[in-house]
Amino acid sequence: MKKTAVVTAGTGGIGLETALGLAVAGFAVTVIGRDAERGAAAVERINATGAGHPARFLSADLASLDQVRALARTIAADHAASGEPLTVLVNNVGAMFAERQTRGGVEASFVVNHLSPYLLTELLLPTLTAAAPSRIVNVTSGAVAVAKRVGDAVEPPGGYYGFHWYGRAKLANLAYTLDLAGRLDGTGVSVFAADPGGAATGMTNGTMTDPKIVSPALRLLWPLVRRTFEHSTSGPASVAARPSIAAATDETLTGRTGIVIGAQAHPVTPHRAAADPRVAEAVRRLSERHAPLAPA
Image 1: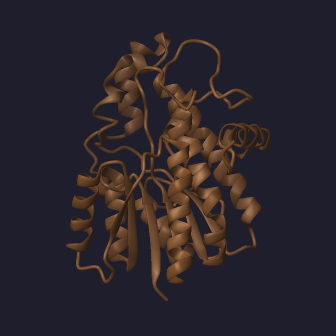
Image 2: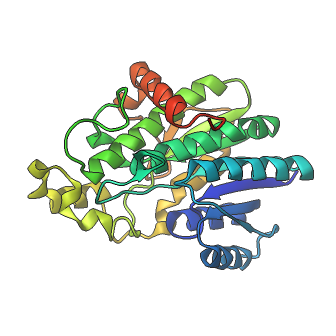
């Protein structure tokens, strides 16, 4: 049976490398992004691998929850019409902001890094369940280690520091990922998190070079901390994509769920806070409040 995969933010960087790896593994890949020109270039590059199925591009601004809803409707309708299963969903989208921004009145980092993949996943669960065995892969980050615990507010009190807010949103998404794995256990839908480790991407070479993204107490040490966090800023995106590709394709993971695939493309222990049921419950409340499955 034909295998299909959707990769968000798949027109460049780690997302594109993930899409390339899935295409080589025999998947018909759909990449999601905002820019049609980059989308066309990504499709051309994927098809140049000689993969057995042509790739396609769908346009959506994943910082807009309304566009996420529309995207989910399109994907679900396409798979219903074609009868082809949606085998893999890779929520690769991520963003960090040097200055506080909002999307729909909600802090932008929380929207892009958690609410967007949460909403897309929840809306596509019927399609993924119908295609079981299928997999959901949510891309996480080592930044969860510096995150404040998620409570009942999207934003913690105090000044805005992009790296910490990014880590907090990624922690929320990792807690959701582990919680979702428990919810779906026995359905045939496996849920994984993939940590790409360090890589030379637009975010690491751009936003993360600004010391204002961390709290004042950390700024003097930030260059050292950043190097430690990234492991290597020169690592290629193709290497950083390996955990996502492994989570989507590794046969040894068949029948397993709720696993974090680390930077070496092997299972690792999830961050302790992400496995805390209290954090998962707080994330569930925030998600349902700010990203309802049906628009108000």
